[in-house]
Image (cartoon, rainbow, N blue to C red; front, side, top):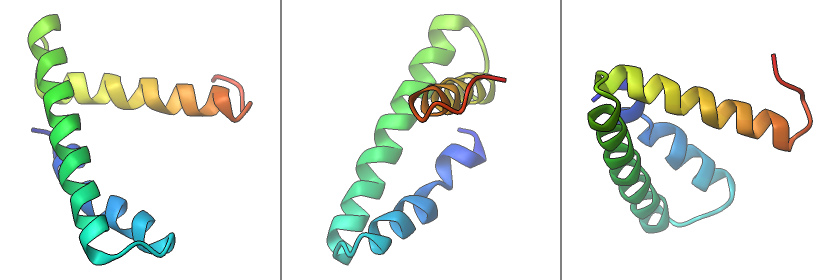
Length: 76
């Protein structure tokens, strides 16, 4: 599993703390999101015949592009 997927817990936890969530809620969110992202990355890697890192990078790019489009930043 790529490091930027596996180590995302700190960012997720910080976002929840910023919103005033409890420690339990933050840890539950970390667990759920890392579990879901890991499954998505591994499924994509298997389906495309790529490495997990390649699948994770492609997923990250998709999500950034979607967020930019949603926020009307345009696509580069």
